[in-house]
Length: 267
Ligand SMILES: Nc1ncnc2c1ncn2[C@@H]1O[C@H](COP(=O)(O)OP(=O)(O)OP(=O)(O)O)[C@@H](O)[C@H]1O
Ligand SMILES: [Mg+2]
Image (tube, rainbow, N blue to C red):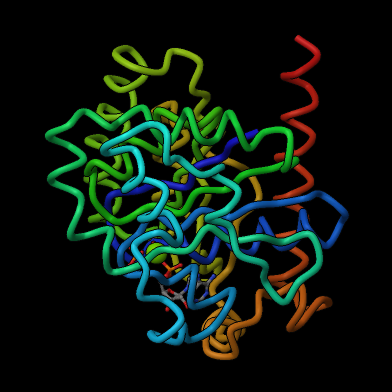
C-alpha cells in the first residue's frame, strides 16, 4: 500500500504527518518504508539524524541512486531494496533523500523517467506492508512521480487562508494527474494540521471547506510545541512522547486511515 503526503504549499506538515503516521504503523508491527523525495531531506533528518557526508558520497544511495540507475544499461540495475536504510526503530525503514535529487531532476524529466518510481515500488510490495512518500512543496518531477506511484494521497492543510487558495489548484492538479496517469489514485482526505480550537478562523475555514465538498478528515491535529521538539530531538512522537495528546490524535488518525483501507479493500 503506497500512501503519498502532498501539498505544494510549504510548511503545512507533510514531513511531520508522513513520519509520524509511518512510525505509528511500524510501532504496531507493520513493516513500513518512508521514501523521502524532498531534496530538503527533512524526513531523512527526522528519522536518522545528521547524515555523515563521508558515508553519503555515492549517487548510488537513497532515492537519487534509485533514479540514477534508471539511466543507462539495464544490466547493472540493483534491487530497489538496496537503496533502503534501517532506522533506529523496529519495522521502520527509510529510502533517504540527498542533494543529488536536485542535480538529476531535469535529466530524469527529459528522459521520461516519471513511471520509474511506480515500477520500483511494485517491486518493494513484497517487502513492506506500508510505503509512505514525503514530497517536496512543488508540483515537480518528484511529486508527480509519487502521485503516479501511489494508491492514495493525503493532503495536509494548515488552516491559513493562503492554504485555502492553493487547495483549489492542488485538487485540480491531482484531478488531472488521476485522469492522465493514475486513475486508481484515491484522495484519502484533507488532514487538518495545526488546528487551534480557541481561534475563530480555523474552525470557520474548515466548515467552509466541508461545505464546498472537500473530503476533510474529522480528526484534527492540534498545534503543539511537542511537534517542534520531536523534530529537534529527531524522534517521532510515538517514541518521544507516546501518551501526549497530539501523539494520541495521530494514533486516532492512523486508526481511521487503516479502517478506511480495510473498507476499501473489501469492495
Ligand atoms: N501539529 C503541529 N504543531 C506545531 N508545529 C507543527 C505541527 N505540525 C508541524 N509543525 C511544525 O511546522 C513546521 C513545518 O512542518 P513540516 O516540516 O512537517 O511541513 P512540510 O509541509 O513538510 O514543510 P516543507 O514544505 O518545507 O517540506 C515544522 O517546524 C514543524 O515542527
Ligand atoms: Mg517537508
